[in-house]
Length: 430
Image (cartoon, rainbow, N blue to C red):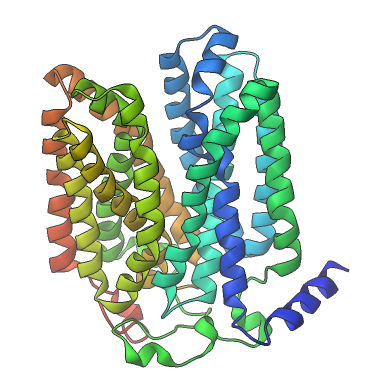
């Protein structure tokens, strides 16, 4: 019955527009629905949970970091499942389990239970949902993949705008525990119907090609479309220098973007802003992120990948330097603009760069392994910068010295990142 409904939806929707755009819409909705597993949603729950369970906010933060680290090691397994069963089926399972994880988290009775809930939410929301959505878009788009990834990432920006105030409103109306029940139900309501009815794993299943087979790849510097059967295995990928160059730079972004998110209010208040002004910088970054993500995606489609990647790493370095120099509202807003662009680059790059250099055939296992490394970076970034700031007597020196890492990664990527030899006949540019 569901197969007939999917076929009927495909027949009704694919006549006027390439069906990949509908897949892209579902993927963007998936990133929005991942909100219960994202840091920006947890932020409004820390104080109510601390008061209810009688544990310190530091203990909650430690449990959160440990759970994020633990969840990272399950992502290679999720990637292999995506390769074996397809992103449609795995997205359906992830959505169901994410809703259940919300219920479990809302029933937490102690710090240990809370940590298990964190791990489930991070693995399903922040990790697996992103992996599945990025895989779907990567299968349906190739020459236009950068632009498509930029549009998909708008779902994450929408979650940043909606889930924190929604969570706060639910806490005030029903308490933090029932708030998680509502978030779990909303996750199912938002995402299950479109996944069940609209999603097909690959365009080849429906007699189509990536990008709709428009043949416009020759008009740009981007790689020509590659088939679903083309790509390196995970073992082959791990024997290429390109994988380690990609991960070296992406680890920098993951680690330091997370640290800036986590400590933004702390940094700004220590440097002279009041807490309300520091918190109000987040919407500026979110707005810039929304405006620039399609532009970042189009840039990835139009210029050589290694140069676009190096430019994104330079934006990361600029964010760190500008954060260290914030002293008033004007400098804070200037930082927020650059940091919004930085978030646009990081969200777009994750889904773009792995299929770009390693192909589509074993994309799930490759993305899963890469994402494990990046989530580890996200888990160690805040404590690393935090302890460093304590030792240095402030954030200025740690942030400025940390900017060296992405600058070095940018230089290395621009000079040495190349398409692996087994794929260079299918992907024409570096």
